[in-house]
Image (cartoon, rainbow over all chains, first blue to last red; front, side):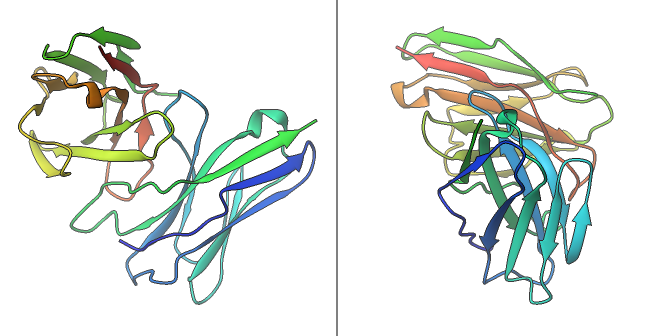
Amino acid sequence: LAKTTQPISMDSYEGQEVNITCSHNNIATNDYITWYQQFPSQGPRFIIQGYKTKVTNEVASLFIPADRKSSTLSLPRVSLSDTAVYYCLVGDRGGATNKLIFGTGTLLAVQP
Amino acid sequence: EPEVTQTPSHQVTQMGQEVILRCVPISNHLYFYWYRQILGQKVEFLVSFYNNEISEKSEIFDDQFSVERPDGSNFTLKIRSTKLEDSAMYFCASEWSMNTEAFFGQGTRLTVV
């Protein structure tokens, strides 16, 4: 499974767009990129998943460049309730293993 | 929105006792998981379960751990003889197919004293 690197923490203010970048230099051909969010004392919650280019849903966008060695989670107009840990996960979950491997994540702190 | 339900939310047990953590996955899901998170640490994979058998387990999931899907709706994690280091949040997760969204429960906080 590809190792991921993301910032330990980020600060933002309400109403701003936040971009969290994750690097995954050893991503394999069959690997997908998935982002999860976790609030304190709660289970992780799926945000978005993509393979290449751009994916958008009602809560976020995921930008993946052509070489797929990094990805950026974009959260538009964050609010205080977006304060959480954000995890970037990379793996072939349709292959021999379908487990999720979590790193340390990025703690996003949104200030008023 | 459908959700994964875990009970109890908090369990305190004495070292050496057996505990059973219970989960009700989303009804049409086929893949089931247990993860744990020691306070302040990463979420760690324990075991995956599909078609009534374990499909993968981690090094953490030793002989003291077992999983069962006794009745087609519940999914349980048993720890036979708890140790202090088993204290953690235990999360159950389910998904209907591989490479789809995994839904996590709210967790059971296990405290071994």
